[in-house]
Image (cartoon, one colour):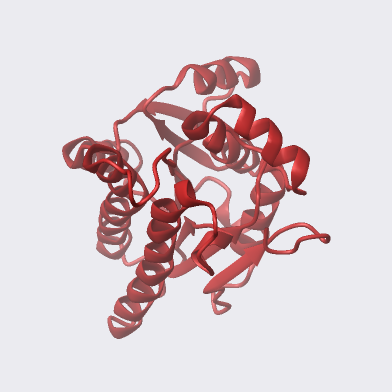
Length: 250
């Protein structure tokens, strides 16, 4: 990991859960971390707690393209550009496909698919403009990208995670055609002890879910990202699933 020291990572959805764990791990590895989220209070607490000058919390609404573009412009003006992008941000919904609303579907698509694509586009532009020989884009997908679950409120969310898998492979093919050294990886965790389903489906569902099924922690995902980043520049991880021993992919 020494080759990443002093480099710049941008993490989306960093104000809690998996994003916070990733941010902490990258800080421990001596990277500068631009941590973006719609809320930043926990990130500001972390910055004060660690007394670090390497953490840069930014309040960004990923549903607005212009805010994402301004963020990448700020990174370019401040650091010269981004070396690692972790597309972690994701939201779920409450509705089934039969009773869903367009407003909820648009919100999930905006964060899980459109924002991920905009961030990837801007990161590639930044990386290619500096002719980087070592750069990495990591998408956080889900094991629900590998099958369709039976629970109705997961169906639209699952569809967006299938899209993330397709977008990862599409981006890899486009970069290969350009003979770009930028690596692209898609991680598909199983059930992770985070707040995503509590936020969308409520506390009682969240409690039942984690009591009924084994889960991994955000720190486990952060460790996996460290492992992926530590691979040599010529080693490519495309799609990587992770889960518990009892239930390996969720």
